Image 1 (spheres, rainbow, N blue to C red):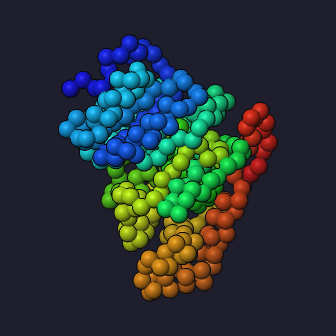
Image 2 (cartoon, rainbow, N blue to C red):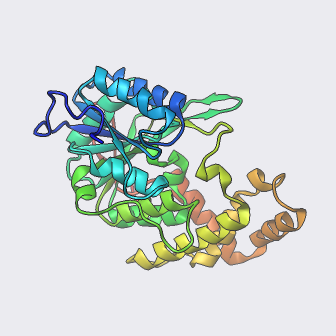
Image 3 (cartoon, helix red, strand yellow):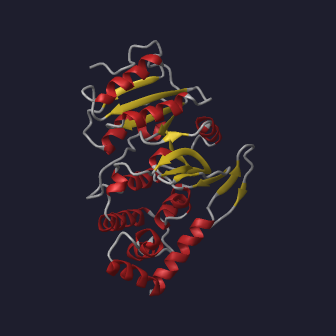
Length: 334
């Protein structure tokens, strides 16, 4: 079946500055909200590629096709790469023609003016492998807004170290929907992938792979509404034992990629420190014995040192720092 929107006059030779890649599966109302947030952007040099994991037989397809018929910048494609979040996201990104690829999950949506800000960053740092922003957290109790204009530039190795320590990138709240990826990186083959038994942590795995491709630019301004309300998602389905096991595997992978490990805790110590840091969110959702086990980890000198390193990483970012607009540089090292 021909992808919806394929027959419009906006042909394949047009290369937009930003492609918005939206993977979707059985969320017609949510994806409609995501689409509208793109249509309302003041930055107009974009295309939208929506990959439907259910395909033409699903209820969402007709809604997506209607949008594609109404705007030549929108294309709807069926995912033939293999079902699931990983390949559906890859399917959307690989169909993008833009210089930069803005990932947007179907349950999230853009803030007004976010594409213009991302475009400004992309023009300022054209050699970066990828960029990220912070997000406004949409919770069942309301929206937690996060605003700022500071910009941080990380080398790939600085980014790997920060991801390993769950530092500034964790504080900013890096998720797939906050990403703007250099199109050359995707076209060179850096895609989401499955690794060992990881399912909950596929996003974190992708961030590590992106960091291996070059510099990361981060802005602490909320450019995306990130929906954490009570609805089905891979992130919400992970159990604590599963999350802990996948975290160990991811830390070992990050450890293997780091060129300079001096002063860094080993993966097991790092995971113990993270368990201590996450006690407040876990205390009512795990057995008392697990809470006591995690709390006692702080008595280990190595764990206390790892926790202090993570706190330092939260507070300060390596590399160049700027402020939008009028990006003026200064230097701050971890």
